[in-house]
Image (cartoon, rainbow, N blue to C red; front, side, top):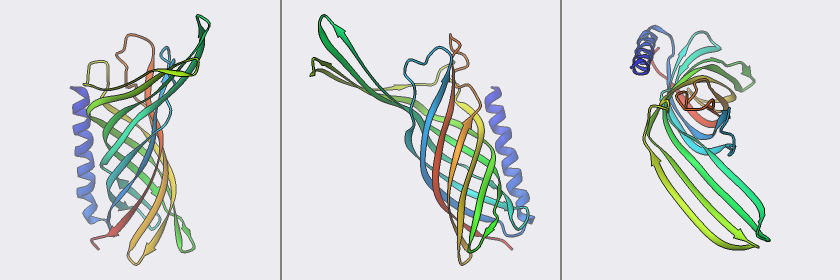
Length: 236
């Protein structure tokens, strides 16, 4: 498949970049972890249930390859919980009775992700600024999970309370491979040779996740993330 070939080529290119880094001065390794506030942006016909941000976890290994004293390339293979949340309420008068429907749900989607970032680190006194921008790719792992709870009230009295927890396998109308852009800003603080940093980012998915659907709707990954991490210099 074209998607699998693209992922394989991307990984080979990344490994080649890491292999070449051995000749670069002061390569740093590290880890980061934090939270996603992910959602789906929907355009087209299917907009009856607008998606809202859903919290999830993210973590990654860091390979920081210096270009100069204040710039570097950072490769971040890792794991990310994405998806979206739905919260919908409606009220209507039926047979002289006030009927209220309250629906809450979320879609849970896990990805293996890898941003490749150009970073600029200006000195800010004892702190370092941190500006990041670059492409990222992600590959869905496992099934899509949908959890929901629906409550129905008639004249203020609860008459129905149902919950669902379903899992959907990958299909021809769902793209498991995604790519996009990411940008962020933060600060770093040196503790001896170790750097501790905190950063916020925004993720802008570019691939339609439902491009083979039967309507004109398009679905894209969107959302913010926040994380903290450390970098430890190795090599020269």
